[in-house]
Length: 329
Picture 1 (spheres, one colour):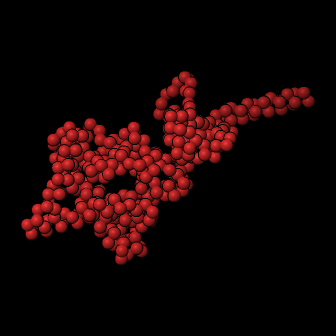
Picture 2 (picture 1 turned 90 degrees about the vertical axis):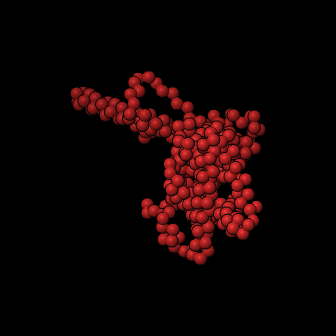
Picture 3 (picture 1 turned 120 degrees about the horizontal axis):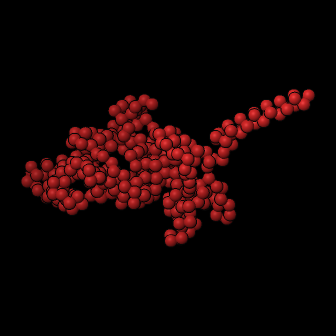
């Protein structure tokens, strides 16, 4: 009898020990924040030899929470640093708890400023200038833009799993999948943030033809996005098309002997040249920027005009009509 009890106890002890060892490495009973840490460490361990040294993690809500706290009147500008160090997994209590949780939740989508790296070719630097300069885009990609209107692009977008899943991720349009996602996230209550001190070195197209094709498609998809999301429309989207029409008008007037419209275009291009040459400290890049800026404005303007005209007469079967910018998932 005693032997049987001893064997049963020993067997139970071994089972308990096995279960204990399993649970020790399991995420089953872990709090949410520890699961995140465990998952992160496991991914690091897949390709790294970490040894026996302890690794200390601190998860905080981040600097965007500080900006959101100011927006929600939780603090004054100089007194908001406290909020960027809050535990994002903790349910905060108190009279301002709802706004604190909202500030943390809104820190799930952000982006950095599109920039040019010194290793880029002169042509790529010229394209980068054309894509980021206030003279050509209003500085939307270069950082001189209101944070509330910022739409992160996929090359410089940081997004939480929660925000991505709630929005169903990217759609089946390309290009245009990134502003579409940003707009839908805003409609779901998420807000975007531009980190002006974070630079994203985005390599550009390396040929004139590939760059024209890219900006043409940018122009092609914008009216589609405006159709899907009418509140996202802005008059500035028409400017490249206005420039295209003005160029045609200038050529006609030049043939007729009126040089004033041509001088306006010439003055604008000289501003582009001077600005790019100064920013890049290169006469050559300044000259190339005239070419890339003209390609960008005219390519985008043509695509926008074509798409807008088609949508006036046919707003059904958009994916079939614009098959070149849609794909099957």
